[in-house]
Length: 449
Ligand SMILES: C[S@@+](CC[C@H](N)C(=O)[O-])C[C@H]1O[C@@H](n2cnc3c(N)ncnc32)[C@H](O)[C@@H]1O
View 1 (cartoon, rainbow, N blue to C red):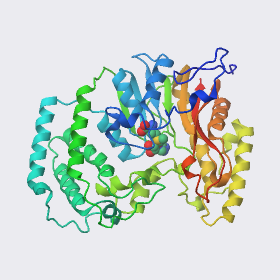
View 2 (cartoon, helix red, strand yellow; view 1 turned 60 degrees about the vertical axis):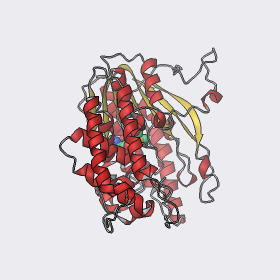
View 3 (tube, helix red, strand yellow; view 1 turned 90 degrees about the horizontal axis):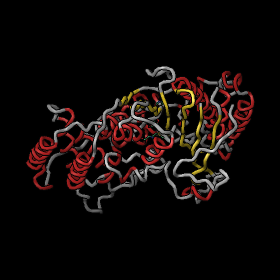
View 4 (cartoon, rainbow, N blue to C red; view 1 turned 30 degrees about the vertical axis):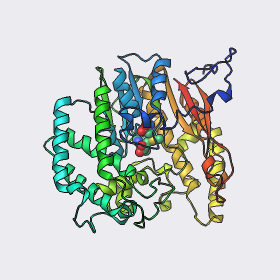
């Protein structure tokens, strides 16, 4: 193993003696979607789990990635890494297990439109819609069309408009790429046109009691479509190969050994963030799911189960859930983790919610091990793997996910790891008396092969 060296990303600093000043990081939110929410193409779908496109852009520069190189994102989500790669002309391979999120990335990656033709098609589409919406006065009955949650989110007039738009888009199958483009615009409109708070998971939607006026769903949709159209005009594609794979990054990928120069990602954190719940409004609206169990079967069950506590306990024994492979390659890490897992198993029995944080922790590290191994295989010697991630404290038991992953990676064969803290997390939950008060952080783990 090399002695640790300090890599300097442009969002990091050197004080001259290669020591990093921790205060420099505060305010840099490269782990969040803030920058991306304002950037062309990236803003086509606001995904709170997404990260900043600037992190990708700056990393390509720092690690001297060239056009013929390959980069890899094992949790590519809505395609932030892939979109930047396509803009820069770098070959990229991304894997996402949530089919709706993967579809969002697919649409964001298709810029192959003839501007005039698309403009004409959109105009015609709006003309047809206008005939059906009669200037906002619609008399259709949409009772029973959607699951209850969807009705809770909208003014009834807005929901009727959204329904008409949905039907119009679904019937527009002659041009699948245009259909997808409009479908994503309407998907993005769903949150903007909602009266209820739609910030779940974590925040349940408040009921709209009908006193607030409509939010002009049609206007919001039109604005979104024309903004997307404008983004397409601004975006230039460079020649490269982009592979947006719907799959499971715990499994072997269609990448050759040592093909990749740089891997970069933000994996699920060990924090019970439920990606399947995050897209509940969208999948309910499009009729892709109607119930919690549909969502579990079609989305949640395909993801790293360990990012949620929806775990079938009868399948596991908490004493032996953490993999023997971790024990064999990294006995110290195994010991540390096992201590936390058993503490969580005890705490669980004292808590009303009886959350499966114990199993979640064990299975999370088993899954991460699989991803680390596969990424190590595809990385070329000297290549780097950058992970933006946060630590965790389920039931107040601190699990240093970030540095433990770094140590595990080194035990597995990476030469060394560095960790850079970006910001503190969890501030907004401070007032919650149910919550622990362990300070949490978000940072970057950089592994070198
Ligand atoms: C933190 S998000 C990454 C978001 C991405 N950086 C973006 O900008 O959209 C983690 C993603 O991992 C996905 N995921 C969870 N388990 C997975 C698995 N086993 N294989 C591939 N993707 C998975 C989730 O659906 C989620 O979209």
